[in-house]
Length: 162
Image (tube, rainbow, N blue to C red; front, side):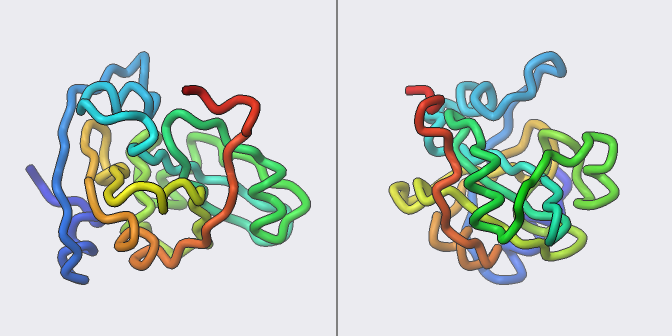
């Protein structure tokens, strides 16, 4: 397998990680499906979303696959009045990655990154490896450090699936 920018950056910083691959379905690119494919609970697979803040511009949010993003909570945490998802067609230009292949590691530019505090409940979590069908399992502390993540409560509590 060819290494992605995310993998190269982890290796450059001597961060241990494991690659998990799966066959993805173009009709179901959800993170919960990826978790199922690799045999992990959705709480350990963190999806990364790309958003645009009305004051700060691009911000990233990462949260467990079984959570829905609370836009108001992210806006508060990031110093914005409102945030909205970036249109899918703009994701590659901004991040260097494709939809459902966005890794919080190794983007074209270091954007403000907010990760749900639930990451601290897990010793290791999986995030996109930089392309569809590839996850990287790494230590949650390593992920926070390498991305300069800000911990926040990002999930809708009334919509969190069990």
